[in-house]
Image 1 (tube, rainbow, N blue to C red):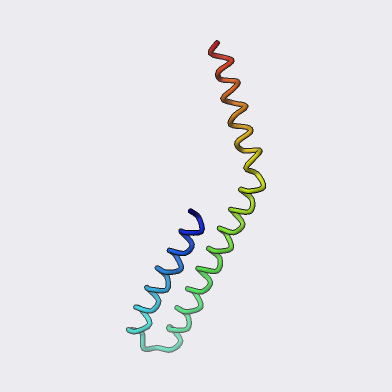
Image 2: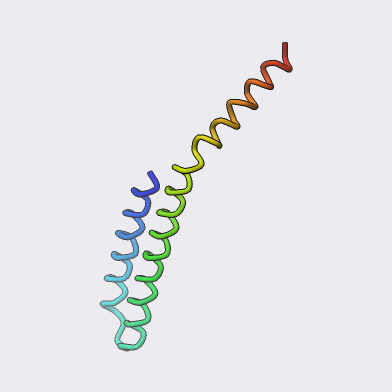
Length: 78
């Protein structure tokens, strides 16, 4: 799902950028928009990549901790 969101962000930023560039006349502002949009999607993509990589590394620990707490709660109720 995270990668689908990245795809939607790329599409949304691309759509907005194309729409805005058609009404901008100043070339400096056009380049600022292009560069800032590129940086936005680049950093967003990098952050999702890091998030999914760390999730894959920590998944066993995270869910193992949840299962341990569930077992402790069940034992405490008995």
